[in-house]
Image (cartoon, rainbow, N blue to C red; front, side):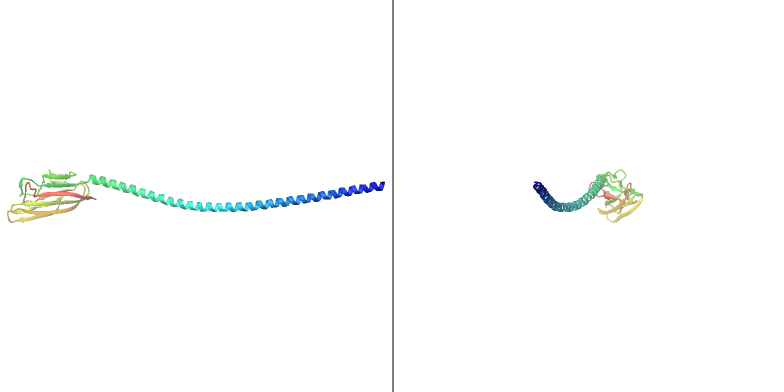
Length: 241
């Protein structure tokens, strides 16, 4: 009986050991399977990460390209804005100059046209005499004074003057042109016959504001005028300086 009991005990122990080895083997297989599954999962995650990184790199490259394009467009826009600002400044300056010129031209429109007299003979006198052209037909700007016979320049500029002369008597006819007290020219003609005879001349002078122009009949000279306006004095401002 003791032998049988011992045999049964050995069988139990062997069974227990075999069962423990089986359980250990199954545990090892399960652990190994889990590790491989995790490694496959990690591999899959790594591949996904690679794909994601590539996508990010592509997006970054696209963003850099778009940024470079935006910077280029910004520089172009800035250049256009600067050009427009420069044009606006120049346009403003031009408008200002135009406005000043328009104002200046409005203020300096000068022109006059006059006749000497309706009374017939003028002269001869014993001394040089300033002629007063009393018949004023045009006096834009009121620069000509019929009381004194003088034209006074209102502004500095280039002025054009023209005068005609007529006489019937024999002898000397003509006029002197004076700028202030300076004689500019003398026009004369010696008539040998009693008949109508004419002269005309013109001059362009640079005048300062306040300069005076007048025509002077020399002593011993004579002229003739009537309603036909055969002796005239006229002038105008060509341009300011």
